[in-house]
Every structure is written in C-alpha cells, then in structure tokens.
Amino acid sequence: MKRRTDPTDPLAWLARAKSNLRIAELGSGQPGIFLEDLCFDAQQAAEKALKAMCVHHNLDFPKTHSLVILIDILESAASLQIPPEVRAADSLTSYAVQARYPGWGEDVTQEGVPTCPRIGSTSRFVGRKHSGRGRTMTALRTDG
Image 1 (tube, rainbow, N blue to C red):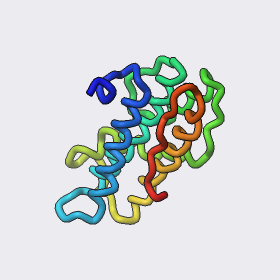
Image 2 (cartoon, helix red, strand yellow):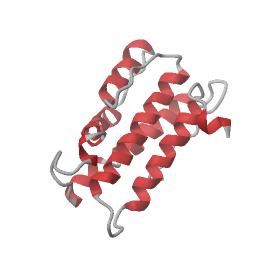
Image 3 (cartoon, helix red, strand yellow):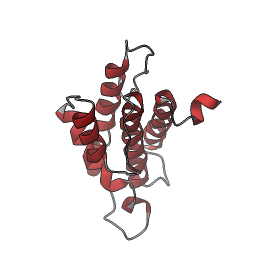
Image 4 (spheres, rainbow, N blue to C red):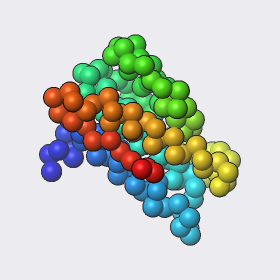
C-alpha cells in the first residue's frame, strides 16, 4: 500500500485525485448529498492532480488549496503551457474550504455544478503530460 501513501510518488497523488473525482461523480443526484460537497471533491481532485505534476517535476509547492497558485508554479518552474480549460478549473478553488461549512457561502444549485467537470480537463492534461516520461502517469477520466 506504500504507493497510495508515498507523498514523493506522483502516482500516489493521482490515485487520491482519482478517488476524489469518483466520489464527486457517484454522489451526483443522490439524495442527502449536498452539491457543494461534490464540488469540494472535484476541487480536491484537481488540486491533487496538479500537485502530482509538481511532484513529477520535482517542484516544491506550498500547502495551498489554490489551483491558480499550483498552475502558476507549473507554468513558471516547469515551463508547461497550461490550456485555458485547465486554468478554468480554478473556479473550483472556492469549494476547498468555505463550501464545506454551513453559512460560509451560498448553496450550490444544479446550475452551479457544471464547473465541476472541468477537473476532467485537468486530469486528462496531467495524464498526457506524463505518458512516455520514464514512468507513465495514468490519466483520470470523467466522461471518456
């Protein structure tokens, strides 16, 4: 089980991202599940996928939930070009903390959920960038 818990292994970060993404997917439409909690899991999936890239490139990153900070690190230190659809996943950052607690933000409506699938773009980007570099990082999938 070391693979799942080793913070120096980018695949461990991707496994955790995949787990969060799966929770977000399976919880949709289920009674008793708050949409903001699903968006939290989508944010966590994006965050962990980006941190996997940082680990893969041996880049230090701060303890942060900000997706744009992680994207900026990857663009500047690893000279990666982050596609606009991946950068748009930063809209999930607000779900990292505030959305988990009562009264810290507005309730998420079904119309607010479409921002969550942007993680699919982030995770597919991570998978593409790591295939063929010594060890393959499996792309996470949301919709095929």
